[in-house]
Length: 104
Image (cartoon, rainbow, N blue to C red; front, side):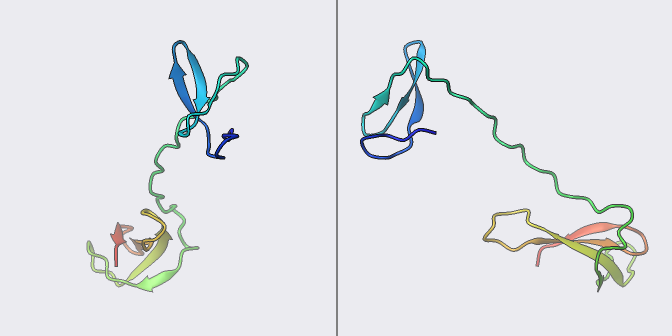
């Protein structure tokens, strides 16, 4: 990452003819021949974690299963949205192993 010597902003890659140069919004350009820009792909979206078969380490709560009506479920929390929003609570029935989300 390089910074503009004029204003201190981050220099962004810009195509000029057949070359890629670094340029700033203030008008400064870095036209060095030895410049190499490394592009890295953005991280792929992560899938939501599924509870393991052996989920005895998860906490137990009094929650009714929507599938079988059993009154106990294991639960875990996952941050599936932005950091300023609450976590999503996932539940797994002790009896039938049905999984569901609690958004409250």
